[in-house]
Amino acid sequence: MKKLFTFLFLSVALVYTAQSQPIEYTMEEADYQAIVDAANLMGVNTAEYPDNTDNYFGASSYYSNFDTEADGSWNMDVFPTWEDAVQTPIAAYVLPAVFPDAAVDDVYRVYFTYYDGSNSGTDYFDFICTGAATFAYYPGENGSTKAEIKSFAIEGQVSDTELDPENATVDLTMAPGTDVTALAPEITISTGATISPESGETVDFTNPVEYTVTAEDVTVTKVWTVTVSVMEETIISIYDIQYVADPAANDSSLLFGQNVIVEGIVTGFNTLGSYNKYYVQDDAGAWNGVYVYDNTTGVVLSVGDLVKLTGKVDEYWGVTEIAASNVEIISSRNATPEPVVITSAITEDLEGILVTVENVEVTEDTDEDDSRAFLLATVGDLQIKVFDELFGAFEPEAGKTYNLTGVVAFVYDHYRICPRSESDFEAVSAVNDFFDMSFRVYPNPAIDVLNISGLNANRVIVKNLLGQAVLNTTANNNRVDVSALHPGVYFIEAGKQITRFIKR
Image (cartoon, rainbow, N blue to C red; front, side, top):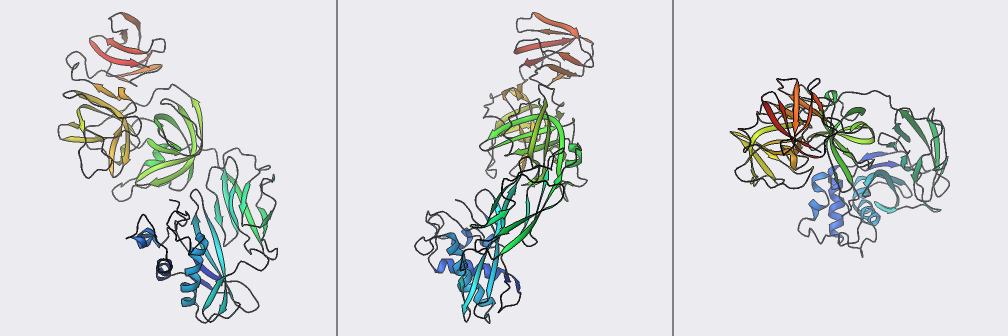
């Protein structure tokens, strides 16, 4: 269902008329309840929640969830529109209780914040006192008296638009390097109103620009001041976004709410419905990874892409994230940072980090209290939840142990490792006696370059599954160029050390 009000914040201000003086009023919680009670009394009910109407209408969040759909949520015979459903109890129950001595012809304006299923905004209703403690909705004799800007957007902006109806201001931020001398904003305004300059008209925003909105009745005008800023081209480290001194006390980013630019390597990517989700690291180790939520750009990424992304630092269900507004692929097929080998419980500093847990038994997670259970990786007394948000389900083989690699996510109150492909489950039980497990290679699978840790020799030999040497080379700076190899499984030898890797 589409929820109309995410937060119903109503205040009443007396409109200037010959008979009235200004009054400002903020609703008390009891008045919100009056709207709900009135709606129920006058026949509002829901087929889905017939025994829990008050809660459905938002009793736990200021009675805010009013529904616009004609699906039984409103009694459409009583209230043809959601406007009627809200205006009626305000006029009949709230205003008379608050203004019992209102004079006839006094006009009261009730402001509210709404959500139409995709965007939030601010609007208002006008009410006129028609008798002793009696009020009616007042649309205006010659049309609507509303002169509001309801949305204001410019292609390439990197911030949310901040609309302040009370002060008639609009503020937004553009991407670094934007030429603000010729921008054409798309604007929506009150029904029947007009605006100058018009929506889509090219405007110079070097300095704040005044937009004049004229209501449908042509007697009410409102001058809005629009300020457009340009973001500075400053790359910041992910560490500065993620690091907090005492996560137990407060794990929110110190840059919460700020627009930032970061560069890093994509370590995991997936598309879920209408948005992309991915993880980016700009260095190996703790605090250097972050989750990115992208429902704006539509850019499809691959593991190993070096990206520059712009977005707002946000906190969502305990996760620090960047809500991307722009992403640029600088290069592809880069090595990902070396995974952190974890031997104890995952903590806040590893959120968004590529990690490996070695020699684990992988079983089904049967935690009845975990609504997002998938798999459970166990080694000794250590148990780590595994989740499939970056790729499909995996069925581990009974009796096998694995080196498990993935990105750390915080999902439904648990830290979890999110593998990116089946190859992130590296079976090791059958090869422990043959391979030197202190000799590690990454990324695995590799695309162009294979990094080596624990190397005790400079010369390396790569062999295929038939035992044929296909590459005999020097590991410069513990890196081997494997770009010429065909995709498949290979063994790499260095002195008496040997291990396996996959070429993608």
